[in-house]
Length: 342
Ligand code: X2X
Image 1 (cartoon, rainbow, N blue to C red):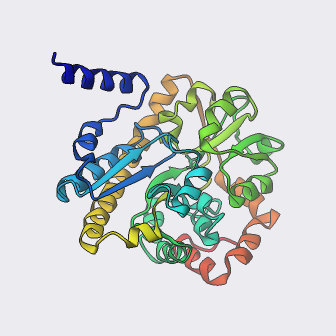
Image 2: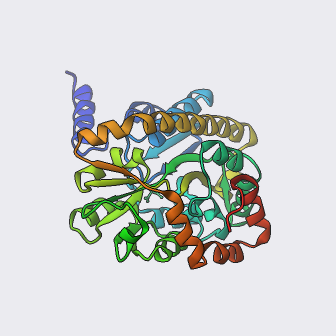
Image 3: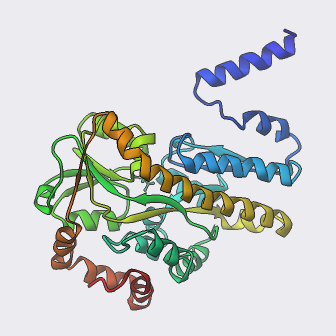
């Protein structure tokens, strides 16, 4: 092995040992010098989650089609910080891109949590009609007004399920006083308070350890995350509540996006949106296969009667409250796809 080859090998080996080696590292380094635009993308999800797998594919396709002029670097797993940290970095321009749940983004863009209203969407047909239609367009316009650029296609997080280490959640009464982690977002806190639970706002970067040390008994996330983030190691029960649908907006710093020439913007948008659509398919496939795998890891599943939970929310005034917060106009757009909610 030549001196240079050995050095490269050692660098790669230590990157591997540190867990930072990624499939695109080779391509990233090869183009690092020649790239006109080196763009950092961060997400809160593990590298093996389809969102990061597809983002990496998009990065490779963008590098190729722009002949290395655009080098999109993918940083999964909160490597660049928690969602809260990354949102302030995207706003300041310290990083270029991130994926963020619309519910968390609502601390900056209030209407962006609207797709997470409890038990609003019944299935994916309703979700994609709304998010690729007028509801998504309304939210993207508001994101633009807040100085960020949102790509057209929202990526799938999924319908969310409640997990627990202490007991299965089968009826709304089981949630009484239940210590549950929720992401940092007023809608999440409001919804679980309305269900009489005891929600704690915690960034995803801290969820595994919060569950492991029993700061909280439970959390709620789609099956693909329960699997890829290994939450099954610290949770026993999974209640199939499907209590809300959550998606990730692929966001860019508005000024930095505007500074990219239109021809390169077009290539980036094309590949990011295509990757988002591919990721939606991955999640659909995972949803169909993952329950069996999680059962094999020791998790116990139970269905719930969603109407019982919805009735509690209705009685608590949850829907009426949020209708007031979003305003009749946005609420009417939501109901156009989800049906009457009050
Ligand atoms: O924080 C979560 O639970 C996650 C990963 O689902 C979101 O990004 C909303």
